[in-house]
Length: 201
Image (tube, rainbow, N blue to C red; front, top):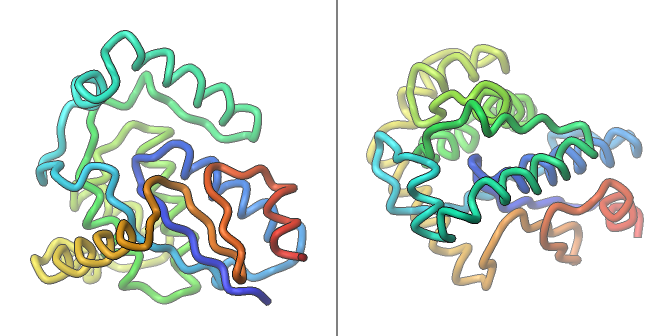
């Protein structure tokens, strides 16, 4: 079984698509999902703890006229893979540091289910995944109690995630999703066939 690392952020729709497709590839091959190492990447490291308005943030970054067309494009691609992205419900760009810290703190075999629960909360229901209440509910879905959720909001946990994310950029990774399967790097939301090929090469 090859080592699998995935650099991602929880508000990145391409990451949601790419991780879904990795799940499909691993299922096809009968590989355990727990073998995946989720590596933190912060798309917006300066996001405040309370989050920020998604459309305003993206509008300042890309131009307001581009935002809805960007949503339409990624929504269409996601639908082609069976990934639901409800941008009509998403209003906030949350801080994702606690979500990364929570995933890193739980047992390896629970991480995939937790990542999926967080994606569902954000992309399907438009919930604020920077909220301790929302992350507690996501943890419960994945069979995790509330204790590690509270710890994920501690300053020490945030410092660890920020350091790891800074290290990721020093590796030359400038965007996500980014996969490293064995010694092979794949960038972007790969389709299941490409991921199967990398896993079996």
